[in-house]
Image 1 (cartoon, helix red, strand yellow):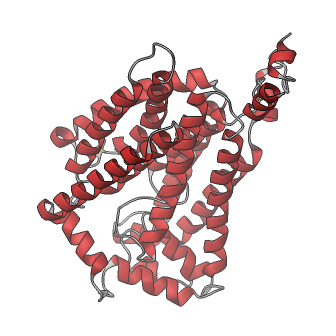
Image 2 (cartoon, rainbow, N blue to C red; image 1 turned 90 degrees about the horizontal axis):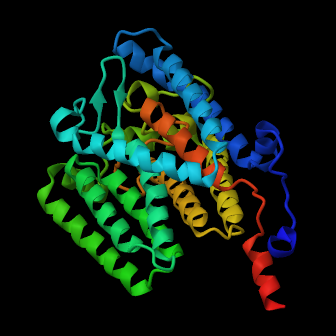
Image 3 (spheres, rainbow, N blue to C red; image 1 turned 180 degrees about the vertical axis):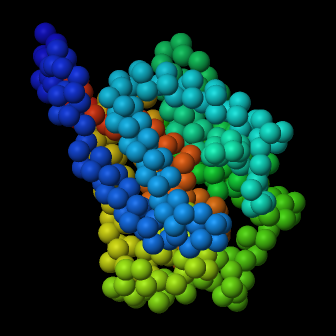
Length: 388
């Protein structure tokens, strides 16, 4: 009777956990993540020793830390990917509450590490950036609210999710962290659109975003300085953008050679925000295209698998996670080539950073859990049966 209603069952629920996980996981997406992390380690070997030398540390201090954080991220990714969508939702709600409390406490207990934005908690041996963990947790929690709002007798989920995103964006803007605020708002907007929001409402929200940006430009020196630097026709070659642009130009098609790049000696953030410049200079356009292709495969495969899902929560949460992941990569690389203003955003799984790596592992683990093959009928099969 179950097969008559839902179609054939691809996986037996009585199978052991690990074999069932291996058969249902998207191996292409997971493989691309491991390759990206490997590329990040390779680029870290080139970009981090100069920074370690400037700080009086061992040459491979940051590489070792990246390996440790990355290993934790890979373990977190695999562990979360084994969860059911219901367990992912519960984990996300708890993580969202904890990350939101941490975000609200930043103005009182946070630090800026001299970068002009209070985004981190200093733990002495490491630092934590709450917004990195807030992003995936909020996406899943908001998807739950949006999906619940479409059930008969359900709560006003769209209204609740809108209130949440406004509060979060306001907290992020106060740091100021307009890049993360824009990314959170974008992910929510994509889910809102997929959930059936009217176009006029989305255009209204877009107008509010433009008005908010105009207000921020007039009232935030940090924001105005970055916008002015982006719009200026003259690029100071002694700035980070100037060094990055010159490195990308010098790299050409095949690069200047492994270890021969010079930008890592000039860029303070060569191992984080501008690591793509190191890749372009030493390995050339071929390496950059390969990195872009890996991100494209992850996003496209995830969205393709989500199109076959009939559960609304799974589709919304997976779409938000996939789009946020892809847009973050696009923003990071867009800043390096001066297509976008400086945002202070890492390149997922490639840049150095404990919070970004571990939070990225959790986010992709959630995405892998939501895109697993499940014993259910695909939405296309259900629509075809209804049409008969």
